[in-house]
Length: 271
Image (cartoon, rainbow, N blue to C red; front, side):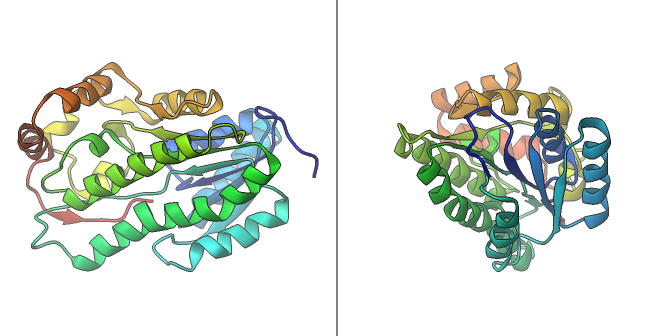
């Protein structure tokens, strides 16, 4: 397969592509002519998205229905995607949150969260990155959250996982200067997706104002990724959260986040 320029259509993988921000990012990539690798657990939704991309944009897609909670999934995905040729864009979007008191929450759900949000993200990046460096071009986007900037009572493991994603991404962005490969952290705040419903926090105060659409978040992230920006925080209210995180004591931030998250317990998957 011929080498692509930094903004030329190539092959792009989106995890968590079956709904929400991942789905919108896949559509943006398809509109620009990229061939897609669509990864999520829900095969029917992935096939429907692949057909939409084909009909609307003439873009072909490889559908991989797999669970990133399984540590064996990233190597299988790497091998399957390799059949299309080199990967130009990797978007690590898959993730989910558990809501409830840490001492009472299902530990299996917390460990699965870390596997999906942290370990599989890291593994996929490590598998695809060397090839990008060797070819002298590539883009990685890791979907973090404004949760990465603050402590998060009642969702402590989720918030911590996004803090990892942010720190890891910004570190890589620095390491990769001059290689032709860029890494972007997308940090949305509350977004209209299935995430909050499945995490059991649909009535939390966090969702009463400033909720963005998945399409708007995806557009902002896509523009930032294509420009090589290391950090994208879409929306004015979200930018204010980030600013506050730099000015206020962490004890105050934790108290505020705890109030916004509420205390209803639920453990659900959202990828």
